[in-house]
Length: 74
Image (cartoon, rainbow, N blue to C red):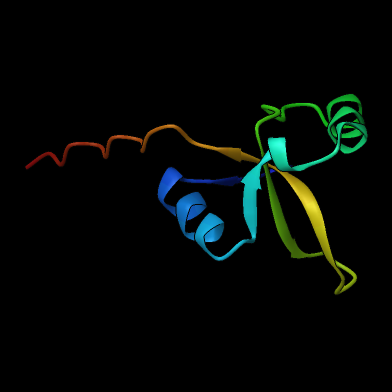
């Protein structure tokens, strides 16, 4: 499963250096992610703790806009 962040969450992570654009990664990493991970939009990465407790890079999708909230009915 691919991590997904809102644009705001991504900007916050990017500010602290834990997320960024794939332009900062080598082509080999990008090609491997594209080949192995379906559903990745190919634009962003995130640096987070893995299930085994080790920090690693992962592909990331960023939402371009927030979903509108459903209108409340009275």
